[in-house]
Length: 531
Image 1 (spheres, rainbow, N blue to C red):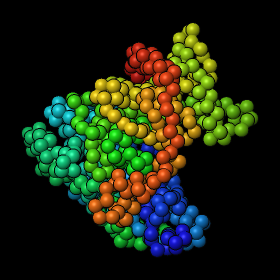
Image 2: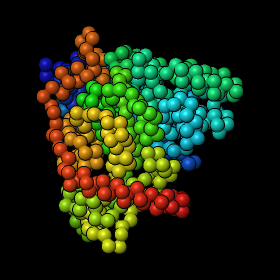
Image 3: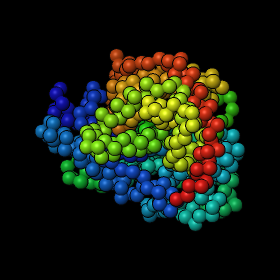
Image 4: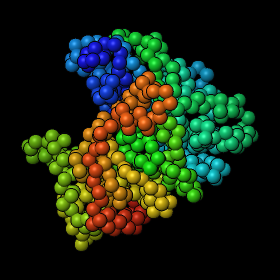
């Protein structure tokens, strides 16, 4: 079947992911290869001491990215996009979206980037004996209770960004288990919210006399492959401004960006893992067993089909690195030179490989926001150097690449060195890996393990959620997600594998000692450089 017929007959899957800097839509065919895509650039805003996105931006971005995809379908294949075989929606995980009985948002969306729930996160971690990071929805809810915020009494539904979009387009208040595991702890036996901990939370809030129980305001948890509703008439109009898209299309469970990253890198089986490096950075390792104790640096979440995952999540990654590259772009423009961004990134990243393995006495902190893994509630981008350092362009760029993964390394050292977690292979994806071989070699040095990058990984989470939509529609009876991905999506696609260079590993370890020693500097910057 040719691609045009595939589109006309709806033998396709559509995935749309709302990332932290881009909303991307990808249409795939029966062979899971992308047929068309569209994207919309957006950025979070810091308003009233909260990192947020407006709902108007959400819908503008969804319509724009879908519209661009539909335009590409018409341009490439000469047909209007009126239907697809299945759809999936995903988004950045965690955060706080609460709605009243009228379906209206009660307070502005509080994203994963906020570090304003330290008291609640510590309290719940102690109560559950299970790490509850500040980003998690339940930490935000508990903090709102502790803060005596009036809106809490009126909460009728709490969900994530992907759950919100799915609800508005299908009418279903559901959530994929991977995304749900970043709201509240999951029982991996039942593939649902942990019943004991739900009861503990309700008991904790009992004195407040709220008219709800936690289970009643949370979304229903679904696993990959389950049906999660269909696109409604109203939903089709919300998504497609042209009005051509038809209702009735089956929709898979909405997932978080961690889950779609696992799908997009074939990392859902035990002893596999992936690192997603963009505005934030996180590593996901599918565990063989529970960890020996609670670590504040490690989240326990799940794959889209409910397997236990150890997750090291860091709020900051490439934002500061990108800002420095933009400074070099501005210099190039000022000097009347070419300033193609892809070329600039490539030149500067490759220059970093010429630097000293330990960065020659330089150090930087890429903290645009707080960084819980290293104990910072607030952050300020900071660069410093010793007076006798080797201050070269190569060392400067290498320092910023190291800094983008430094907090992640601290978290992963717990899994690999203290818990002796085994991973047969780690897959890298996201913007840090666009320049071939550079981010890959830096990550291999950080974790002292082989890192692979697939050609398809560049398609990102939108492709990952499209795969999950395809799995729901096309899986064989009893076929697991891991088997579907390995046998039908990634068969023969192993990617390019890079072993760690021992000298790079030793250099990164030296840099980390300097990085840790400089924490008082970063803390002073956060305290004294006020907005």
